[in-house]
Length: 230
Image (cartoon, rainbow, N blue to C red; front, side):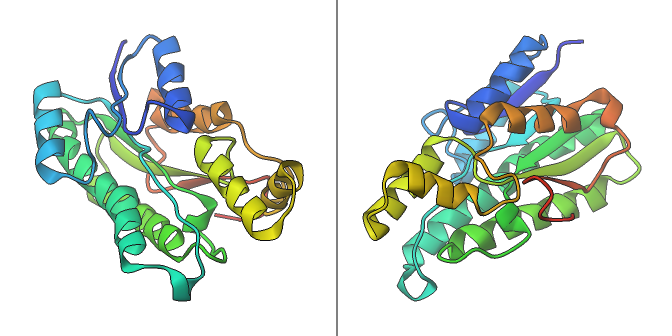
């Protein structure tokens, strides 16, 4: 049965891979970028989902990151990451949840990060906002326990995306390493020893969204090769 799937931040990287996977399965996929639906704008989110109608699967994928030592992290950087990574997930979840509850069916999957489980240096805003996104998922899961709606999160290590490429560029700028060495430094942050590919994250999201995953609620699936036990 074809489902209505919304993947926020779905125009590139992980979001594009997730959208492609659902389309390949025959689902009707909407993959809004910021120009289509600014997830930090309460009115814009409300309009988008009202015009769209019932949603069967919501993937909270829109996200941003910034890197700086805590003492040099600006309030604007802190707030911006929270607005996109946490508030965006909240607004979109709030928009679809009543309809899912009324139909007693639905899947909400949040793309978080290994940073939602542990702290990384120079990522105070990102780490804190991803912790908040997972906390939101768990609170949502508690509210829908025993219904046909589930909420879960996928938590990958570094993925080969534009966001990671920006992190590689920052390492090169600050340390003088070449691109290969800078990428290897990120890959070494997880036991996997390499960057994940977007399709690997998309597979995990599709797993949580599957009809057969109805008994899985309030869980995090960590993709890092076994370093974090969730």
